[in-house]
Amino acid sequence: ENLYNVTAKAIMDAVNSMEPGEMYFSTSDASEYIRDKRDPQVIDPNLNRLCFVPDDENSTPTWIVNAAIHCVGLGAATTEVSGDYPYFVEKAVNEVGANYIQIQGAELAITSDGTLTSKEGATRYENVQSYGAALGKLLVDTDKGSEIEPILNIAHENIFMQVDNKALQFIASTGLLANEGIKTADGDLKIPTEIGYMEIGDNLAFALIPGELAPEIAFGGAREAKDSWLGKDWNYPSMQDIVGKDRRLMVLGLTNDQIGYILSDNDYRSILTENEELLTVSKNAGSRLLLEFKALYEKVS
Image 1: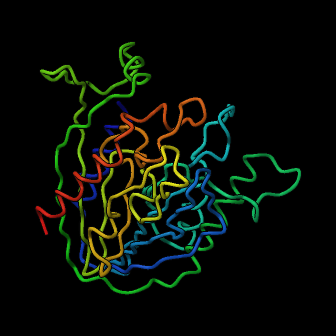
Image 2: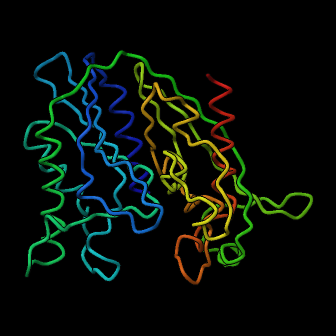
């Protein structure tokens, strides 16, 4: 309850204190710090940064960074409470006089690669600190980038996702999940959620996704039939294809909801081999959400 209250207050305070300025966009290649734990190997390799610079030089700039890297550096067994690596990224950004906001991207099985930052004999916490400091340095060392035209278009769509994952249905029946399902007349179980599409400036596009998206759905590169678990092709365009090559697509994951993992249908594997399959609403969640995104884009474009 406290988290909701302080978040709502922060949003209202931000709106009430808006001021004019300029927005810039830049990217920093962080591919050597990112690891995909699940084939196919598809990632957004960049720290994508929106940099707002107020006209009033006494006001503080704000950096909004989109990056797909799970915050799991301390491991599942940790007893420490921590902001993980984003805390140390923010610390580096604050030291150069800017506010910091991070929004996760298409992060299905994307995690940190600490090969270059981990030190022998260091604790996990110290290695997380080193990792965050390295990403912070990447951002700080990048120039502010290209100026963005003051254009903002955004649309949302309420959708229903069918739940046919029997394991998840059982978990839901115990009352452990916050989402409320709706039984249709033919006995199907569906949950309400939402998707969104946003444009900033002339050439930046954002898919607002209510969960952890497989990056190949966004950027292409899904497995072919010969390599996929089910021996089938993924016969759908990528989200990048849908919005067109003249716009750079980015994914804002976990946006306004969390319905779990969103996988490509043809590579939905056994729940005995992967944990993502256990926590997805359906083996067809990827295609269903992609088609809803396509319909929304075509409705507003």
